[in-house]
Amino acid sequence: MTAENVLLDVKNLKKYFPVRKGILRRVAGNVKAVDDVDMFIKEGETLGLVGESGCGKTTTGRSILRLIEPTGGQINFRGRKLAESGVGESTVDVATASPKMMKILRRNMQIIFQDPYSSLDPRMTIGAIVGEPLRVHGIAKGSEWEDRVQKLMSAVGLNPEQMKRFPHQFSGGQRQRIGIARALALDPELVVADEPVSALDVSIQAQVINLLQDLQEQFGLTYLFIAHDLSIIKYISDRVAVMYLGKIVELAATEELFLDPKHPYTEALMSAVPVPDPGYKVEQILLEGDVPSPLDPPSGCYFHPRCRYAKKICSEEAPVYRDIGNEHFSACHFADTLKLQPIRTG
Image 1 (cartoon, rainbow, N blue to C red):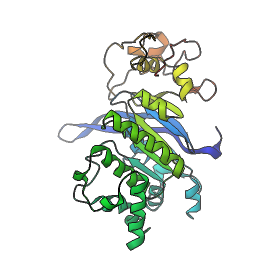
Image 2: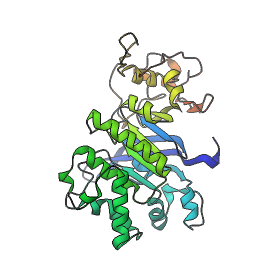
Image 3: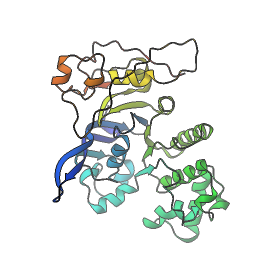
Image 4: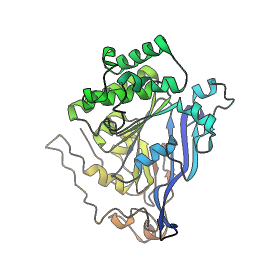
């Protein structure tokens, strides 16, 4: 990794939600939704973020964009367009950026929401939804505005003649295309795709995934792609980060992660993926117990109560998240010695 090709560098990111009790609403504890996350995204790549429901994936994505305020850490964004905007800085810490700087950053960082139904205002026409960022940032007006909206709709496979229709007149897949067009309106460098296909039919999922890849090449986009489906993650991602209970436990190039996992949770997660080959046998690993509460996480390694390889040190000391070679990061005491089963998803 070189500083020149890193678009986003996240260090020690935290997002805690206070739990208040009593008449005076005093803080009795914190839900550690995101707890000391370190990761980086290279320019032009797709970083997949995967994990169980409730592990903190969406909170991580929204904290990076500062749609919710992070509790701590650094979110260093370094974009070409940022340097070209005349702000006098080539790298900005999103976590501490001023409101004026955040408006500039909004043009460079956008999000595609998970639910194509609730993420669109039912009272606005499609043209108004897609073109709203252009109005807010004062980029285009009149015929120029209309022309840009039509081009955005065409780019995502929608008929520009439908720009005066309302969201309820479109299918789920079409609504997600509208959300994608809105995210691209300001020509961003980084797009956080928060499970953009999980609410869609399988046949439509493939269309949207292929569209996102085409748009990435066409507009030079960088994606943080959040998903549950490991098959989709493998198909679209250049590198994959695995998240458990608010922490990144493993991060590596996609092929290397699938062929040579270095964390027991990654092995267990991948063993549950169906393989479309009746002759390929893989041991399905059933994790014992429930996911611990982020309000009161276990001591040492967060995964040790459910890990079949756990030893005494796992409950006593938190493992160091480290590079074990070739930019393959793992937070396991035994990452160098464990021989975990590789997974083939197709």
